[in-house]
Image (tube, rainbow, N blue to C red; front, top):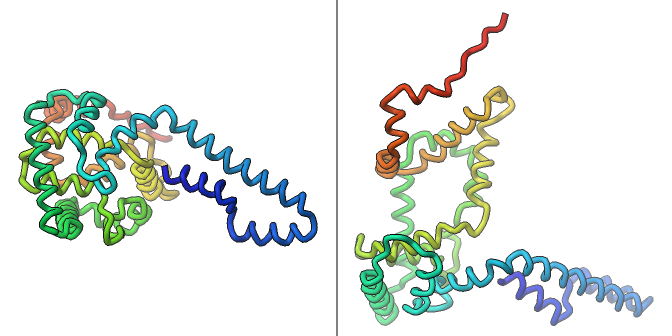
Length: 276
């Protein structure tokens, strides 16, 4: 991890920040022994942070290191050996390994072709990502515009694909591009990549839900019960999906369809209490 590496580098270089260095120089002129004690305490703090961080991620370290082969920017295109290890690790049902190998070979050839022809991969990926973003935005419900100003907090937590450097390409965007270049010809590889990149790397999505709740459950709407608030949040979240996606999702939910056709959808209706 970059954090652990940077902290270890600080210990090696004995660098604790410019302000700390200036203060230590001032104290050194008065009491050199006190400077030694302070440096020892600084080292102890950094070592404590390193130990805590490593203990927190130790149990999942090997797992995520195995998945790191899908980070194409630093590792190059993944090898079949690494891919097969991941397949055994995550155990996705209904994978056709023979077809997966053919898909892998096709993707590898395409990746090599781009490199050899200097195909300006970053520009192609950015163009593809921008088109996908425009498609999602144009297909979203008009309800999105009502909360545009209220959800600025969410925008800060979304992926910043347009702010990347000239050389860096986000792995999820690169895989999305590679898997969509030739249409739906890589169903098995798509299952694996979709599963891997659905593993959250942060709590940004959870924070976005709290942000929407904050803007919906205001002081002026404080009589809303929890169930009503939950229903509104589901509506706001689902309105970000395209119409075709949400239509297909609803059709895949037999319990929901049954309730739509019957009076079961009213089973939680509360009896109104009349105040005297």
